[in-house]
Length: 479
Ligand code: OGA
Ligand code: ZN
Ligand code: ZN
Image (cartoon, rainbow, N blue to C red; front, side, top):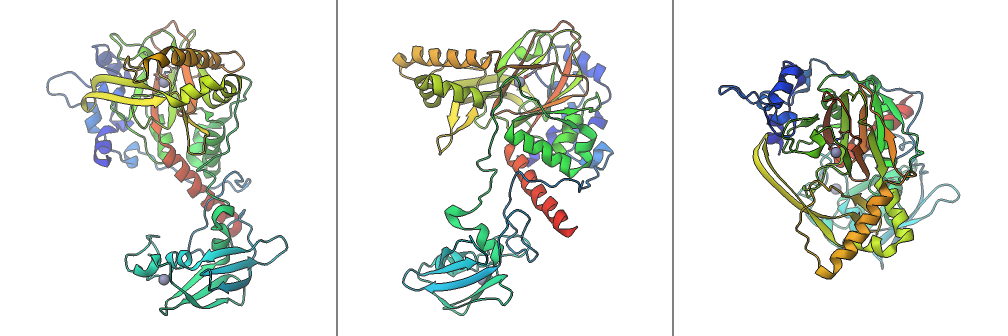
């Protein structure tokens, strides 16, 4: 994976000029910038020349912290071995008492302060989570293979005590091994009562066309961690945000993605360019309208977050269309539970064939329109009429009901109270959750409209958010 990626990213400094690429494009190559290769016999494909080296951008991103606001949206687990004060927001008091229950093979721990609940911790779980250097690598932060007794349910604590300052619980095991557990680490890991990682089941605010999309300044995002945090948090909660004032030239998507982690390349390269092309390989590459869709449905893991940078807006038309697929799914569930059931049960096939950065490809996947998670909540919407395959592996008597349900949902997506229109300005980067928010566009007049798009993945977005949460909390407690 990584090796493929290294070869696939084009550092903008290596691109000699857009107009030349456009004319290459006009010779009929497929979809993305990855396909924008010189056609001369001895020419190197441009995408092979780039290296995924941030330094090649000629700019080191400065990372500073704006201390005027502190994040309060998400919690992240305290570092297992943290010796400092508990992280802001976790709010655990020091330990008050510990009782041994030999019959149940567990400890009962309580914290100081009124309202603090006690918690039972089975011995085996405590032993399994010993963080001494023999059991847990202090820098790799992972269990060591030497901790062979860690899964033994018969393990017994011989001696148990709370330190004088109430900050740690010390356990001596029947084999002489000793473990120490910090009060806030224990408090955080209270099984079903724990705070949990909020990004695993994020709270989302659903919206209609009256939503006020939040804007973020491109330079601030590159320079300030708090701004970065707020943008990513907005992507989690609303699934859409606008980045303003990026330079109107290729390569900005790459820079923005690098603040999170890295771009997710596709078969079209690290980024793709949306512009009107002869013999287009996508209905996006015409001047025509593009119906509401989520990107790249033929992939089993569809792209997580879309970054779409407007380098050149359309003179007339070309407005972006956006709709919160989760909100409309909820509406559908209320007014037509059977349609909702059908769309969460049966799957459509999606396929895409072509030749691009990595040679010929033939993507094929299968998704329900509305995907539910293990709690029964909506976790993903997949719609792409352009790549929906005739293959439909459902009972034939279900085909008409499925079409009926799909048509209903698709029409509801486009109701005026749901569908938002926004015309991208030069330098705007539209960012949205590709698993939740559908996008499309109106037709436009001029041929010159040009967008550069790319993707980052949710794992990386969530990882950056967690890391920023810890970092910003630490900065706050250090002040
Ligand atoms: C696309 C796309 C939107 C636009 O190419 O997938 O959604 O505004 N384009 O052209
Ligand atoms: Zn140990
Ligand atoms: Zn799209």
